[in-house]
Structure formats: C-alpha cells, structure tokens
Length: 208
Image: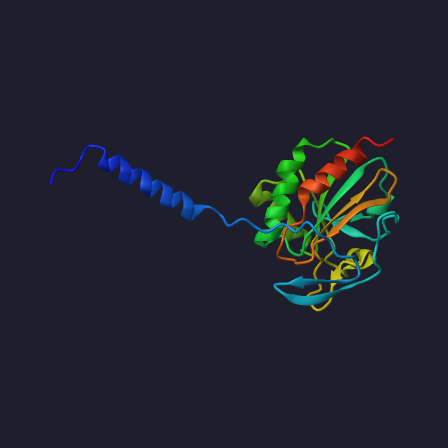
C-alpha cells in the first residue's frame, strides 16, 4: 500500500506535539491564602511551628542583621527608608519552587518602579546564593542570607522548627519602614500569590 504524501507531515506533527507535552514543566500550585507569622505551616503535609516574634501588618520591620551575598557585609533592612522593600522569603534557593519564585520576582518584577527593591532572603550561604544568581542569570535581584543564626526569621516569626529553614513568604515594607503586606504560604511546596504582591508593591511605590 502506497503511503499518502501527507502522512509524513502528520506523523511529524504528532511526534512534535508529544515531545512538547512531555517537556512541559509541571505547573506549580499557588496559594492565595496566608497563615499568621508565628503560627504553623506544612511541608509536604507535615506540620512545623514557626518560631520567633510574629510580625503583623502595621508593625515596623524589626531590626536584625542579614549578610549581603555579594560582599559579605552586614545589612539591617529596618534602617532603609524611601524604598519599598519586596522581600521574597524562601526556604532554600536550590529547590525548584524557590527557583520558580525567584524567577517570577526577577522577570515579572522588572516592570515595577525602581523605588521597589526586590530582595530574596533565605538561609542558604551567601556563596550558594551567588552561585544560583550567576547560573540562572538573575543578578538584578538582591540576595541576602540569614544563614548564621536565623535571627531575621526569628524576628518575623518565620523560622520553622526542626527544619530551621525560613517559611515561604512575601513581606512588603513601605518607604517609612512599616510592614504593609504579608503572605505566609500555608504549604511550603506551594508558591505565594506573587501577582497580588506585585499589585500591592505598585500601590506602595506611589504613596506619599
């Protein structure tokens, strides 16, 4: 039986469709809800308490020292004024969910005002943060490390017991150093609602 001339094209299209579907990365779930700082979160269904002094919207950002990944200098974010701080807080930069969250922060956040400073905070070492930034090409985000004692996480009520990692969260701080938005993701393997956080950051950027 002679093959019809359009059969090879059909076979090629079917093969390409199969490859495209197989190669498509799984869509990560996004949590729209938040739990209070200082309460508890889950990691793959297992519950962990959040240690430290819980921060709330309307509180000044607590003073604590982080380490700047680029030069190992100490940074106290509570001292910064006239900038909106978009704090993208992740458990570990080397996991797929944290990587996805940082890509969204860097790529979709590019459209925000320069007044909004995008910062990734984790307990990874500064060296691991820099390795990630260089490999991913995401060097327009600032990386700060809480690797020493987890004092930043404790100051916000976002340090998980047992794991001793930071809970996944987004915290927005206005130009006067006041916390104006918090989402603590209930399940650590889910992404935060970055769209809602971007919208709030844009509102804070134009406040006078």
